Structure formats: C-alpha cells, structure tokens
Length: 224
Figure 1 (cartoon, rainbow, N blue to C red):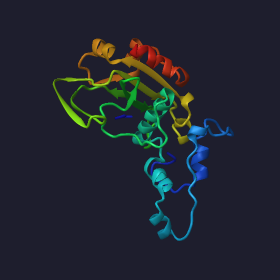
Figure 2: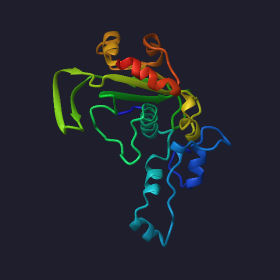
Figure 3: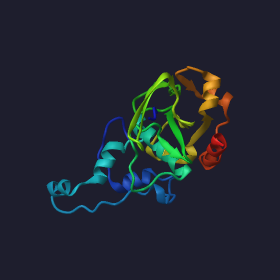
Figure 4: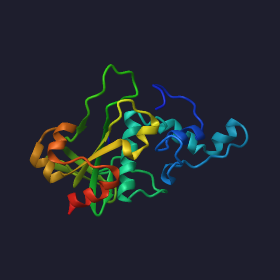
C-alpha cells in the first residue's frame, strides 16, 4: 500500500549488474539481505521459461527501484527487515489490512522520494497518502470489515522518505539514504483529523525523523 531504475524504461541487465547496483556503497560487499538468488541458465530459452525463470521475472517486475511501485515495495521490505518480520520464504500479501504485522499491531508503510523515473525539471514535492478507509480485508481471518465512519486501520504509520535528488537503484537500496517518521495512528488522528495526505514538513512537527538503525526502537515506542 505504499505510494510511494536504471533508465526511464525497462532494460535487460545481468544478475551481477543488479547485485552491484544494490550494494550500499561502491566497492562495498553486498549485505546478505541484499543478495539475490543466482539462477543457473541451462538449455534453450524455451527450456529456461518452462523451468520457471523466477529470477528473470523478479528482475523484470521490480528491477527498477526508482519507479514508485518498486521503491514503495522496497520501502515495505526495508521496514520489515528493521522490524524482523520479513520471512524469506513468504511473499508479501497484497491488500491486507496493513503492509506489515508486528507485535500484534498493524503497521502501514508509506514511501516517497524527490526523484522519479521520468525526466523532471525540479525535484518532486513528497506527500504521503493518509486517507481514511471505508473497509478493510484481514488476510489472517479472510474477512472484510466495513466501517460506518471511515478510519485509519493500522496502529502505527511509518513514513519513508528517499532523500537523494538523483535516485538510482544503488542509493534506493542503501538504508542510509532514507529517513523515517514513525507516528502512532492515534497521534495522526489528533494532529491532522480527516486530512488525506501529509508532507515531510508537517510530519517533522509531529515526530522527529530517524534513520534505519533506530527504526525498530522508534516503532516500539510508538506502540507501547
């Protein structure tokens, strides 16, 4: 539910190239959680597809981290890594009540950046969607719930801002190039009411931005 490349259009790229672009810094070894599984190519292209080229599909689908969709999913994963709730063999669940579940709480992750995957005359103004909802689906119970009065379903929001004005796959993948605001939903409701979006300036009057290393402790404080 985030709102939150190499170029402005899809390109063919090797495993080694994507791995290098995902390193936190040039020349640094990739962190274990940034490594992509290697796919062994055997036989003809037809045989490869019949065998299921999942690595190729993942690269094609989300290989451009500068794109809002890819960057948003990466932000969810980055927050999930900080909270220790990402299970390597379990894919993300689309349309759940919130993006992540942590300590019996729902965590909504919102992502944005100043740089886009298309040509820009100036950096984007980052705003995050915080609109209330009229219904939600619980992936655990497989039940829909409708609300007489729209509400924000999550217990806490994590707003993720990718700060570079010239985004690349490499700096999107670097946790140190992000800043995060953690806001309990009760606080958000009090501060902004029915407001449907919020910018980084307003967020900074509600909470101090933190880095990735301090994210888990800050979330813990927000939900205690």
